[in-house]
Image 1 (cartoon, rainbow, N blue to C red):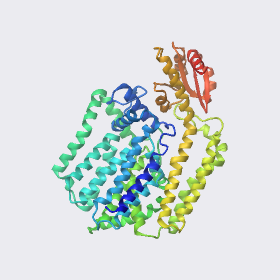
Image 2: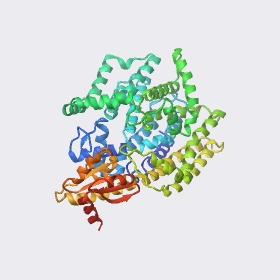
Image 3: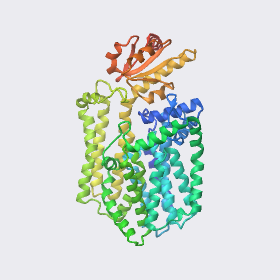
Image 4: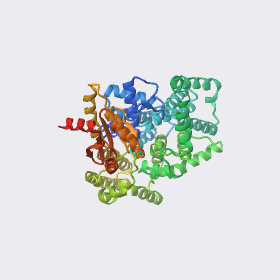
Length: 570
């Protein structure tokens, strides 16, 4: 390896560290997914039960166990805080970037033209994706799943490419098994069909030989069977119904929790989420479709074309699976990103005619959401804020908003507008060539995901966090004296507050005010997290005393809870 390799590696590591780890714990956990996962891992540590995840004291069977184990390990090492909660995702993204960078090592000198250039550029394209950075800096299962799907597929591709070296296929099975332990059947639903399609096109089914298949299935079962049997032993049929039927089959067949979208949902997500390099996706698809036609005609393909063909199959199949699924979220599309990054980087190497009339038009179309978002946040927030309040649905919306719009966001919005305009100039300008394009993408994604969105999150979530931490401090003082404190939500569901209070919080919906009245009349202190907009309804509930308001959130309780909080504040 020549010195330029180490310089490139140092540059990629430095850039990844800045984009993935800077300020990782500087903003509160978001709701609901980050709050739910962090709370479940926290409860796992407190209970000592590492088989059945729980949320608010109840079994939480939405995802398999591996991510919760990693979260628990991170909490045990670094403490229960935001940085530790997001660390597994950031590390997963780092390993993915490094594996992408080191891919060139597996190809011989003639395999891919300008081999180092291809994979080094791929890391830069990936780090330029706002969606990649967003998922990598969040306490979500998706980046870990993306890493395992990527590694499983790449080791399968290398198994075919390197003449059926067995240990490569064993690694493919290993990472497929870990993907199944991370998010369940979706890993198999994405990887196995891609294996079949690629094998069919190359007429190479060596991986399906009985010995290889037997060893692969054995690895898969060895990784997954212990936990799946253990939780089935504990939970019985309810685990099958909740995890496999509700969280997988129903999530695929019908919209859950309002997370739906039309057939073009992921077209828009990829267009915005990979901007500005998403403008090259149509060209990439056209090129790869021509390679696919060659494969159908039994023509020999160069190694570089085989790589692009494999990335094309992986991207298209994953896109189709996600599009057919009824439940959609922007983070679900993360497994496509590394494959598209390779495809786009290959295009950048093959041609210098980047900006056709079509690509320029597409650029401005995709630029529009960024510009509109920044302008609305800068100039239109005070006009849209009352309408935003009307979108809040009690019981299901996780956020409460203050009566007046948060003016502290406006300078960040102006900054984002200027950065976006400058990046557009860099990307479209003829000076600087490809370097200016990568600089524009990284600057735009970095400012948006590392600076702007965390600033918005602090405005929205920090009041709830501070209120929860204040209650936590008071509850800890009281409960050391063996006096229990009942905490409840009313018309609100914020799992992050369960994490910050380190205390179960009973959930009561607005259609059951009598349940809140019973909780308030119970012996001992009772504290209620609710919304300022529900204050009029709360006046009609006997025994409720408001304690304090904070940016749309209202803390109240019964007389004992009210006196408890007032005593602490005095």
